[in-house]
Length: 485
Length: 107
Image (cartoon, rainbow over all chains, first blue to last red):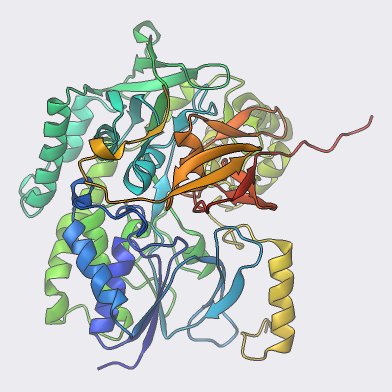
């Protein structure tokens, strides 16, 4: 048995599976999550204050989650630290593994307490968030990400609207429509930007490889049944290209798209709605892997080997940060990562099933990208005054004119000139969009190697909390050293 | 017609008993259910926006719902910049909407 310590960041499917596997391999485990519950966004659920007799109807794999939660909560060898907002990760000179700094307490509170964690190995399982492309009116109240609709349906039983349009790209739109319906909303339609031809070309090759994933196919059939049963239209090759209203959404414009996602103007029609939920995919949360020095692959996911080890010693990664593959891939990767972080090997019998499942379900990631990935023609639905950066209120026109006026090939300098991506969300919402627009404005792309995914301060921190941490550091020698070589 | 909390009687999950709570939002009392986020309580009351942007004064409310976008920030019991979608509401919380105007530039 190992006597190693493993620190797991993120308590979604990948992190929970990693924590359990590391415990099974004999390591002591610390599991951190920024929220006050286990399960992550996938198993977002009602809090203990709102018990329900049949909550499982809102979820897939609820029994898997319940078992993971029960086991970890009962395990004295697994310390669960909730409400832990990690704000920095650093590797002290000569240290084996990075140190993780967190603030613990009520969300964004002013008197959270600082705590620093080190362990023999680190498993990063920070997941992903929705990527929503800008469109005219997307800053109106009543426009939500699909993830918001899902979170409030599952976590609070609040439907974000009563007449709701769901749009964007990817298989995630289906469970979102289902959750909205189950929360009392009327879903007017689900609009998938990709045409049926591309969906089939993406999903159908090598169909025998889908056989192992028959559970997943059953899940998809369940959603289709939900759609038929509730008579929700599912339309392909169409998108919400504008939202209208003065102080809130009153209507949207839906249009057909060509294969590159350019809207076909003659097809535009207006639909009245009081909410619209739009997501075009997911952005992995890469701040911690980048801070740890982990290499990313060409598609900007964390590079891992068969053990789920990153290119940084003692740092492992699992789940959506290694590829958008869904819950089954995340569970398998998490289990392998936790096992290997605790000192096990990927050839051990205990992870044999997980290794096989990983092969089946990571195949999903490439299918999702092939069938649903963002196409470059979408910028044709932008107007000059469409906001690209919501925080700093930078329009498409202003971003492009700043780019052409400065003629700089530096992403960093373009951000400073235009202010795009400099707001309080730290470029999480617009970062990749800004990069894409600037690259299109300047053939050859940006040349400074900068990325909007790099955020050395992982979350906004109050100056008072930093000062308190600094004061602690001078008085307490047990905290990590800030000395540089 | 807007966002709303699904009435327990219509909910297939068979909800158990809940405890009510009340917030003050810009001086107005709003009722919610224990365990809801501040954003959830405000949304379910029919209000969609509770912040004005710095530059153009545009209304904003919930957008990402998972703590990423910071569009929904409010002042809670005097603490600024709290993400309403992430902070659980506590009975008696005093919530104020935020409008941080840009500093004036003199020519």
